[in-house]
Length: 88
Image (cartoon, rainbow, N blue to C red):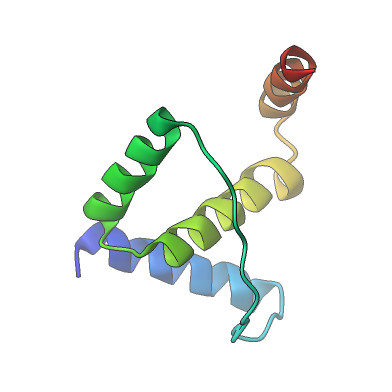
């Protein structure tokens, strides 16, 4: 395993422990369609981190939660609001 992968796993474990959450044995599936550019980016991240799609998606969601919802970074929130308005 690469150092980046191990570091990310450690950060996610620490976040889970801080929130008092149990380790997940979830069996539900999430399916989504992405454009070719996003798929290429995801594949590159998978290769760099040596994570599978599920691990990578969980990591991205956890980082979004920490950066946007918990840290409440106003600049990030404003940028996301602008992007949401453009998507409408």
